[in-house]
Structures are given as structure tokens and as C-alpha cells.
Length: 586
Image (cartoon, rainbow, N blue to C red; front, side, top):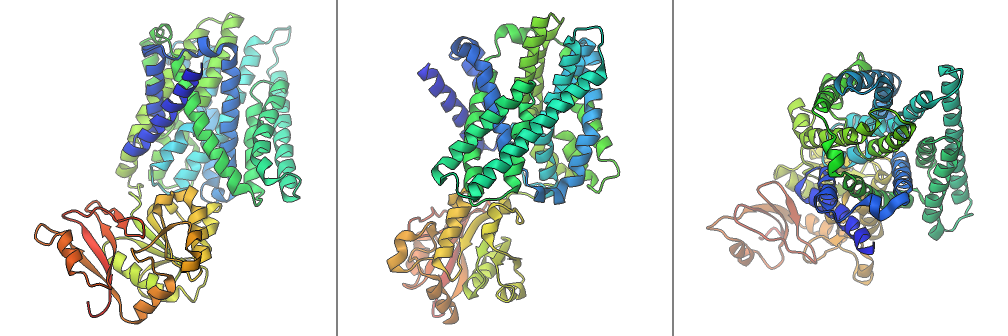
């Protein structure tokens, strides 16, 4: 068992790492890894290995994943996508449910009751899939926020639709009143939402008043999420999804000093859980289940991809202020993930126990939906965004934190190399010089980007902290590290007696402080570019470099910028362009 648990972790995280290195959809690679470990090799058999613990493990993992999704739903994001999200929930859910039911009934040939239940589940668009997909795309904020909010908000709605339809199918008594069943589900939903609100407000209040020490905050949140989910689930199955989502939204919008740390903890935990759950669920696919996938299901998949989703989105966003190119992109992107599989598998077992015909067909069908949507949308999202003209391209810009003479000169030099440069500072007056040199500017505290997302950080391949405060530069590198990646963060040098406190990579081989760099600019130092060729090699360049001059960066032919620092010297090859900081006599 220990070997299998370790194997699940290695396969899940390994697939995510390969996806990061290759740019492929992580969820697709995890699906492949799970199938190889399960039905192909037989190394992992969740039913045999976990037995009765399998469903509780998956349900609790889904609860934490949805809570983490809710924790990313800040109401500030709705300034971009509020109208679109509201339309996709109010109009899109009913339309998508009706069309999905029709597709399952006429396309897959399922009974009407099971078709309605499956159609309700499929109004979800998995946040576990959309999140990793959006990390590799640079699309407008409105599109990104719309897909993110829709995926997280619709997940519990789809589960509740399935609960209501299951209650109607299995209701036994003289009065099969739809109103009574609807009231029952609505009441349970309201109670679950109130539990989520109460737990969210209770935790944030306890944090603000210091009732919980720092080292217990993250564990307390995790335990509260699980307890809240179970509490609501005891009232009515699947309403726990509402509780954890609402609780996450409350914590996201009632900021505390620990919000950022909790967010990072939940993100790390969600990555582990998504990896493990997908490996487990895809490993449950046995050959007997795969063989039950019938040719008529292909008709349903075609209708789902090319009719149900496009018609649902276009009908919902009709007459909205979203440009038609963005509408078409949203209409195409609708991958399903772990929630769809987990909820469908649960109801398939219950309906099969109840004696419903064709209930066992739901398991291979939902895996078919997940596989088809992950591969269709995951591998085509970038291509579709480029074809529609909404892809912002690879982030090649450079963000310079601190407006001063050195950053202005460096910004002009980098802009001359064809890179987009943005200078950020809190002082309006300090930004004037950068603005006069035709550099983009951002007025505000860059540390706010950890929680506010007013600046698209994905557009930058490097962030260089070069303010007058060494401590602030170190803080920028420490706080933005989890957001943009520590490999993208560099700071100017610190005083010799404070060098150990530096948190980021130190710019330039000499590690000069910002004061020294500004003195050099005042003395006439400037930036120059040198092309490395077969005739003028890097060794020749270094030999001709004056003793005082320093290489700053090398730009590769693919526009990657690699910085020289006190600890790193990039490999320079023929075709690269060197950026040098040199005194006037050089």
C-alpha cells in the first residue's frame, strides 16, 4: 500500500512537471498516467486497494479543491466578468441542462431520467482543468475571469441539479410533487450556504482577533473545510459542495494578514489533491468498463462539443458587452474534470442499486466526456485563441520596480532590444522621467499584486526590484516569488553588512547597490548592445570588455532574456545579443 500511495504521488506530480516543461495540458498527462498505472499495467486498482475508503477520499479531496477555487473568487474580478458570469449562471445553466439532456437522450440513447441527471451534471466546467489550462494561456482578463468564475460557481450547481433529479427519480410515495422536491433541495442548499458563510466569517474574525496562532491557521482552515463539508452533506448529499465554495469566497473577500499565506497553502494542497484524485479516478477504468463504451456515445460527444456548449454560451452572452471573438473562445472552452467524474460515479452506483436501466453506462460515458473535452479543449485552446486574435502571446516583457535614473536608462536599453518594459512606482512624480522616455508606467505598490491582480503579471519574463530601499526590494522578491516564480525575480545589490538578508537573485556580477548604479548613470555610464557571431565570439567580447564594464543580460534569438548576477552566468552562444553597462571611456 505504501508503494502504491508513493506511486500515485510520483505519477501525479511527475505528469504536472512534464506538462510544465512541454506546455501540454497537465490534466491530459495525468489521465494517461492513471490509465497506464490502472487498466494497462494493473499496478493500481483503487477498488481493490482502497475499498470502501475510495469514495470518501475522493469526496473530501473534491471539497478541498472546490474550497481552494472559491478562495480565488475575489469580487474585484467581477469588474471584468460580472455580467458574463451572471448570464452563464442564470441563462446558461438551464439552457445547458436542457440541451445536455436532449443530447444524452437522443444521442447516447439513455432513458430520460438518467439523461436529465447526466445533463445536470454536465453543466459544470471543471475548475481543476481550467486552472492549469489558464496558466499556459495569456488571454484577456475578462475571458480568464469568466471561465474561472463559471467553472467554480457551476460545479456545486451541477451537483445540486443531479441531487434534485435523483430525488425525483427515486421518490416513492403517492405524490411525486416536483414542487416538494424542489423546495427540499432549495432549503438544503440555503442551509449549506449559511453554514459556509458562518464558518467563513467565524474563521476570519478569529484570525483578526488573534484567537488562533499563526502555526495553527492553515490546519484550522483545512479541518473546518472538511467538517463543514461533512456537516452539510449529512443534511443532504452533495450540498457540502455549496458550503465549501461559499466558505472559500467569504475568506477571499474578508482579507486578513494571513490570507496570502493561506492561499498559497491551499494552492499547494490543491495541486497534490488534483494529481492524486485524477490518478485514482483514471486508474478505476477497467477494461470491462471501457468495453461498455458504445459507438452511439460518439454522437453524444459530438453534440456536447459542437452543439450544446456553443449554443449555451452564445445564447447566454447574446447582447452582452463581451466582444464576439471572446464569446467564441468561451463557447469552445468547457473541459470537464474531477468533479464531473466523482459526482457521476457516485450517482451511477446509487441508480444501479436502485435498479435503473442503463445506469452503469454513465461511468464509461463520463470518462469519455472528460477525455474528449480535455484533449479537444486542452490541446486546441492556444491555437483557437491565436486564430481569434485574443492571444496576448508569450510574456516577454520586463517589470522594473522603482522609478529612478538607473531603471529609466535600463528600460530604454531593453526597449531598444524589442522588449516591452513597464516601470512601477508608488510616486507619481518619480514616474515622470520614465513616461517621458516612452516607457509604460504603473503607479501603485507592486506588493498589492499578490492579492489584487490589477497588473497582468504573466506578461513579464523578469521582475527587477531596484528601489532605493534594499529591504523593500527583498520583500518584493519574497512576496512575488510564489506568484510569478523565483527564477523571474532579481534585485539590485544590498549593502555589504546586509547582504545575507537578500531574498532575490542579485543583479550584475559585481552586485552593486542601487546608489552605486545611479552614481554611475550620473557619471555618464550607458548601456550598449553587442551581437555575438562566429567572427566576434563571446570570448572575444569578454576580452575586449573594459575592467569596469559589466555584462547585464543576454537575449536569445527566441527573445528570452537571461540576466547576469552574482551567482549566475548564462551560457552565451552564436546569435545571442549582449547588453552591457559600461563607463563613457569604454
